[in-house]
Length: 87
Image (cartoon, rainbow, N blue to C red):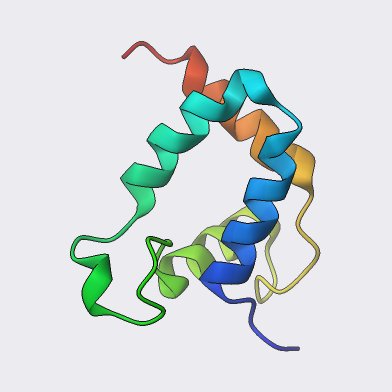
């Protein structure tokens, strides 16, 4: 199975988050935390998380090779958890 790109994962995440305006600010904060330093010097020249990191997170979250279907509700649950932590 083909490995999903960070860009593909980022686009899917944005689509899921659009339906939850109460999580937009939390999502933006988390996105900035995941973007690698000097992202503009590497392809795809967009502020998306490192592909290796995303693959690691998918393997640890879902097991196997990290290529399975991702449940969009997991992202919403994660963002709600992040929002609940003190600043």
